[in-house]
Image (cartoon, rainbow, N blue to C red; front, side):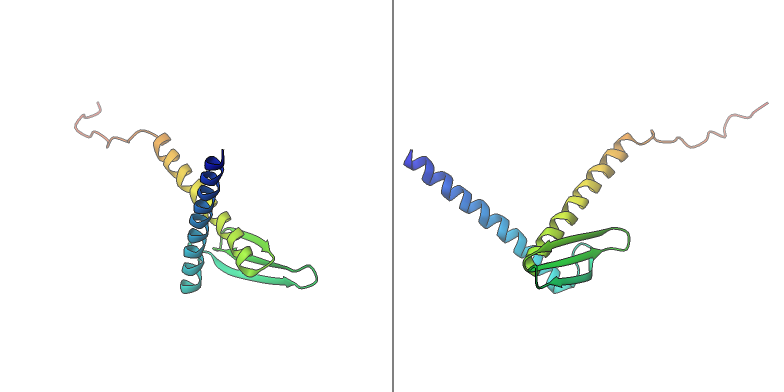
Length: 114
């Protein structure tokens, strides 16, 4: 039982490291480029009495808001929303392409109408 608990605890730690490394990669990309996947920061509000930072990101068509105790925590919330949006769009695009109408054949002008 101890071995199982030890294994599960270390597996969870490795998973957390992976999640944090992924977030740090996204955060670094945002700070270097000034945007994340085409979304720019449009608004930032700090509520000092509540201890909350609210961020708004937009690409001109969609807008996402995230809140957290620190700016990085709010960024993490917004990045997750943006990633979910991209995942859904890619899936829906692939599904729409598969369900699209069959290929249109070019008109056959070899037959003359009487």
